[in-house]
Length: 391
Image 1 (tube, rainbow, N blue to C red):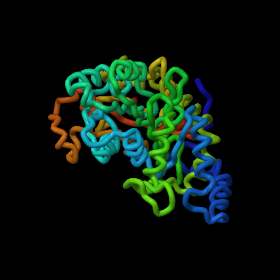
Image 2 (cartoon, rainbow, N blue to C red):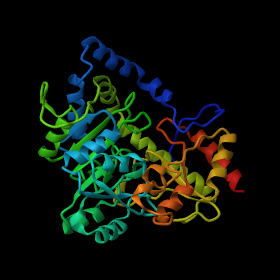
Image 3 (cartoon, rainbow, N blue to C red):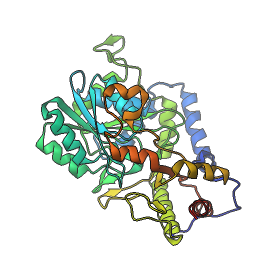
Image 4 (cartoon, rainbow, N blue to C red):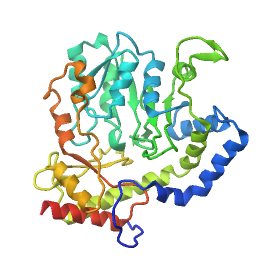
C-alpha cells in the first residue's frame, strides 16, 4: 500500500483543507500576488497570457483562453463554437447545474440522456438513443461531462461524431490533468471548458475558468466574447460579456500549475489506498449498485482518473452522511438531484423516472475526503467509521 504521512489523531477529517496546501506553497503564492500588485496590471496582465500558454501546452491544445469562471467557460465554449438559437445540445442528466444552464444561456435547447452507472458519466448509448429520437438534423452538439475527474467514454462519442455532423464540447470542469487513451482532457473535443474554482484540483484564489480548443476560429470568437465583443477598444463587433480572467488569478494558477501533476498523482495514490482499506475491511460490493456494503469508484482502462472527488455508492446514504458527521468526518453529496429534478429545469418536460440511472445515483452517491495532503491515518478513520455504520 502507498505510504502516506501520519500524525496525531485528528479531531475531524475534512473533505478539503486548503490551508495545508497554503502552508506548502504560501510563499510562492504571496510572491506571485505581490508581483501583480507591484505592476498594477490587474486586468489582462502578462500573467494571463503566460498562464494561457502554459495551460495550452499542458492540455496539448493550440489555444487556451482564460475567463472568469467555469460557468462562463461553458457558455463561451458553446457560443464560440457557433451554438445558439434553434440548436439542440445533448448532455447528461447528472451533473452540476451549470452544464445545462450554459446551454440555455447560449439560446440552445438541452436534451438530457442517462449515465453509465459505473462511472456516472454520460452513456454514449443513451446519447445515441436521444440523438435518434430528436432527429440528428436538430442536434448540433453533444456535451459530455468528465464527472468527478474521470474522462467520459470518448471512443463512444467520437464514433457518434463520425456518423453525424456533430460538435463535441467537453465539460472538463473537474478534470484538469485527466486523459483518455493518453490524450488530455481539453484536447478531445472541438472545445472544452475548465473550472478553477477553489475546490478544484487546479484551483484559483476565487472564481476562474478556461476554454481550450484546437480551432483558431473558435479561439478567436471566445476571445472576442469574453471582452464584450470588443476587438479594438470601444469598438464592439457583437454583444459579448465581461468574462476576463483576472491577472491575480492567473498568477495564482501559474504557481499551482507547476504542482498539478504531483497533486493528481497523490490523489490517485489516495484512491488506491481507499480501495485497499475498504477491500480489507470486507466492505466493497461488486457493483454497479450497493448491496450490503458500498461500491467503490471504477476507472475505465482507457481513462486516467484524477479523482477530483472520491465517490462511493451506498444505501442509506443520508443516514451514513449524518453518522460520519457525528464522528467528525466530512462528506459531500454531488449531486442530490438529477438535473431534470431541479425546480428551475422542470420546464424541460422530463418526468421523474425519465433517467433511472441518474436518479438512483443522486440517491446513493457520497464523496469522501480526498485532497493531496490527506493522510493515511485520516483515511483509516473514514473507513473505520463507515465500517461501524455498516456493521
